[in-house]
Image 1 (cartoon, rainbow, N blue to C red):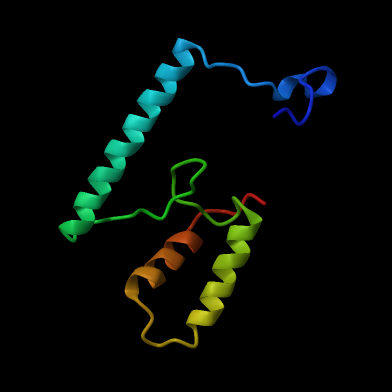
Image 2: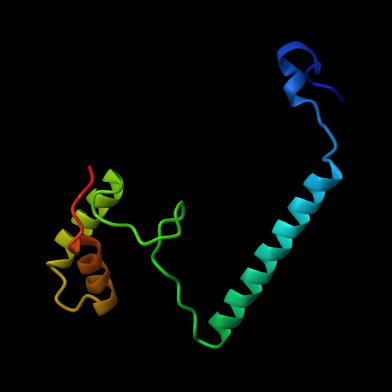
Length: 106
């Protein structure tokens, strides 16, 4: 069943079979993701999973002044943690790292 003709402005919606190169790129990417997922599952099973708190765009830890929403979120988290005397050390350390010595860029 055809809903819209694939002509004019709808031509871009027409299905095109991927090229062999595109298929290989997808397959390789999928295998890499699958292998990484398996590695992470093994780390969970052995209680050795270490997820880094990084920016998904850069792969690096985020810092104060890079992104306004992150700045606001860390500020709210720090404010809330003032009321929690037994907050986990890891969270407190990450907040200290975030606010570290770096000069804000925004």
